[in-house]
Image 1 (spheres, rainbow, N blue to C red):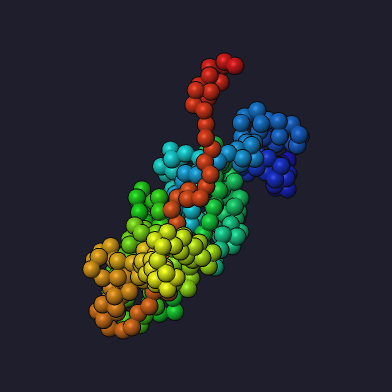
Image 2: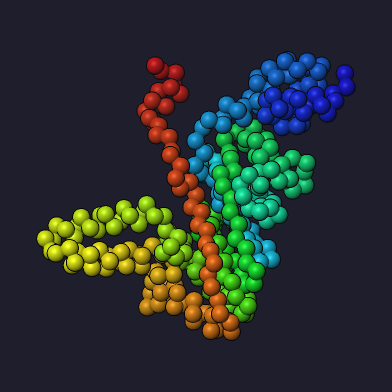
Length: 308
């Protein structure tokens, strides 16, 4: 019996298995769709959907840079073992490369065509789930661009070129020397990796966060028993200190703690021969914010041994 492309496509949609596996299953079952599904299940190939409920908090962060822009992506897997796999690393590197051709949003990246194929990124990752045997997903993606200047990148805990456990982008607008700006931008990216600032400027900090800090500082100040006028000044002082700790431009520069990032930028702009401004940053730390499943190791061992 001739196995048509539409039959293969239909089986793929039903099972999530790879194209060649679906073609083989249909050939083995003489084109019987239900029998082909059972064949794939028996072989342990039609398993992507079952695995999709498992927590994927490991994986890799990847970065890629182009002309006046750069992207960072996070692709998760269940175990660090898979993250060290060459095939998975190639997958993440290609996803980052694809992200450069989009607006950088996660939906756009997922819908973009994967290199050297007809499938999009989302379907390619789904196929990899069945092949590698672990749940995987494109969790997030971001892009920064500049009109003039550079978007510097930095990978922390790098495991391969452009891949690691943390990725940072820093955008600097300037008409100055790009080599100088790129070197300084990488230093700022390393600073961001180390300090994890909340925002680029005071105005960008979430208002609820600011109010919460003010409330805490106010209550602490009231316990001193001092007049309201003094309490107000105490709160203002503590808020200034808070901003110095969480606002990127106000932080002490880790490369030279005698300077703030803002002052270090002024010095770099002078070296670059033109005014410069940091216009944005992105910091992706692998698995941050993911609630990981807690397992009972003893129970797992007992289950593996066939005990109840």
